[in-house]
Amino acid sequence: MGSAEGIAEVKKELLQSCLEGTLSRHSTQGAHGVNYHHPYTGTVGYSFFMPTMSLIGVGSINSAGAQIQELGFKKALIVTDKGLVKVGEVEQITQVLDTINVKYVIYDGVEANPTDKQVEEGVALLRKDNCDFITSFGGGSPHDCAKAIGVLATNGGKIQDYEGFNKTKKAMLPLVAVNTTAGTGAEITRFAIITDTSRHVKMAIVDWKVTPTFAVNDPVLMVGMPKSLTVATGMDALTHSIEAYVSTISNPVTDASALHAMKLIMTYMRPAVHDGLNLKARDMMSYAEFLAGMAFNSASLGYVHAMAHQLGGFYNLPHGVCNAVLLPVVEVGGPKAGVLSDVVEGRGPDLQEFNAESVPHLFIDIAEAFGHRDIGEDANLAIKRVLEDIRRLRRDVGVPKNLKELGVKPEDFELLAENAMKDACGLTNPRIPTKGQVIQLFRNAYEQ
Image (cartoon, rainbow, N blue to C red):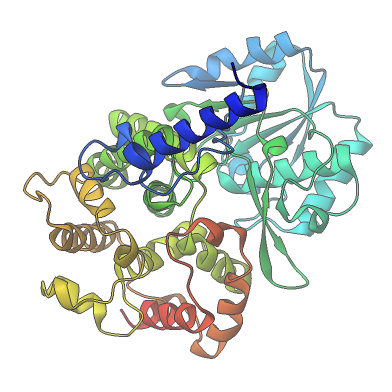
């Protein structure tokens, strides 16, 4: 019998041979859940990040009190926004806390794009009132702000210290994330996006220790969402699912989550937008955003988000709307103006697609998730259909046509591109662009 080292080496070689022969090089055509769709060496494996518990479905808010009580928390800092306080929605969580005799104080200073200053205000209030846990109530903005507050509560310093990957030393303060929108996925993810007011840049804090303790996704809380917010968050969820699916670190678990999220969004987003009281549509969209969150939380994102973060930080624009405008350009738009119209006119072979050029076969599965059954093995047709469907959905729900309508200025493209190149979300894009290509993508989105 050989040495232990020799046996280990043989096992490693067999594993490598297996992966290269049947997984890494396997066509992604068809059922992707049975294979990887990017090179995998088999040396480090994958990570899958989720909260310890998630309460999901109609009436799930009613189970939150028992879980909080079981964890033994005494006083909450409720992180939310003034709008939710004004209309009385925040009472959905204060009533839960009152029922179980848990005290609380409310910080309602969160804005659409939470800032470092708001994080500091929240930390000051938390310390002043000796809160031992945080409850975020709302959409992505309160959740992200709450995560940042929780990080500083246990790690100290300033939030800029934690920009990037896994910079914290200690787990953040326990966080119960009660979600009221169907889009960001922030209630279950390890991501927190905070605007640095001095640089006018959105910082991406990506750290498994900022994952909420548990999350609540009750679609009843989403029924009151304004149409504009339903649109922005729904398009955000669609972007999450597509970017996670084409990510260079996706895996069968994230693939399955992403594809089903796309299917639900393309089926239920229009009904949710046009009839906010449609509880079935709200319920299915809450599952869709949860699935999309599961996907990108582990597979990460791409250059749609890397670019959208810069627009949001620089111009204070709604994140989901920025994603919606950029999505077709980054995923299937080319590095020169005019490519989008070429796709629509069907001149597939002559296109210079961006992400689609690198992973055209993945768009076959995306098209199938969108509901197309006549694609076969035609990747060019799949790309064309996906683009048409995204543009049609944007038009049907009232997304602005281009960056020009959002007030973005072409003279800022160089700085925006420079900052986008530094964004952590871009690292897993299937194709890494040059600065010049990012500038051109901004130009395409400006004029589309």
